[in-house]
Each structure stands twice: as structure tokens, then as C-alpha cells.
Image 1: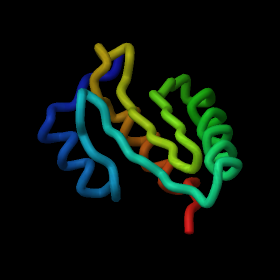
Image 2: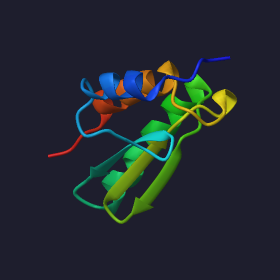
Image 3: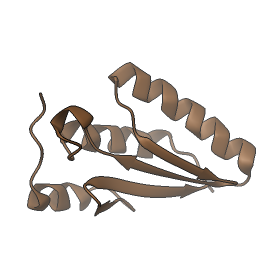
Image 4: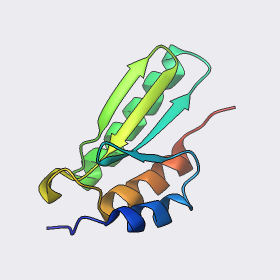
Length: 97
């Protein structure tokens, strides 16, 4: 089982992740796309990455906006290094103008 990160460890990691915030025991970021179809294709791409990692984020979509919340269920719904690693990878494949 993954060890939950302390709040100071999370905040340190977030200094290297643009646009991510720590709130409600998860790291959260919103992405804005050109239109709904682009937002949906991002969600599909995200689903493959999450399935590969056996990771299941909170995902909220409203038209061209997608918000992702990451924490690790097996660590008591706390943020772990698994969440940080996924956030870094999401930033690499998230396409936006």
C-alpha cells in the first residue's frame, strides 16, 4: 500500500506541477479545451492511462472544461506518489491552445 504524503510533501510536489492545487485531500486541476468533443477525447485518453495504472480519478466535465481530482483510495483517499506521477503524465498529454 502506498504511504500518504504529508501536506508539506504535497505542497513541495505541487511547485513542480503547473496549475494543480491541493484541496479536500486530493490534487485538482481544471483543463479548458476548444469544444466539447476535444474535452471528451481528453477524457478518453485519460481513461486509458488510468486503467493502465489501476487508478480511478474523480472526473468532472462541463462542455469544454474537465476537472480532475486525484487521490489514492487504498491509502485512505489521501494523496500519494501515484497521484503525483499521474498528474505529471496528464500534463504531458493534455493538449490545449
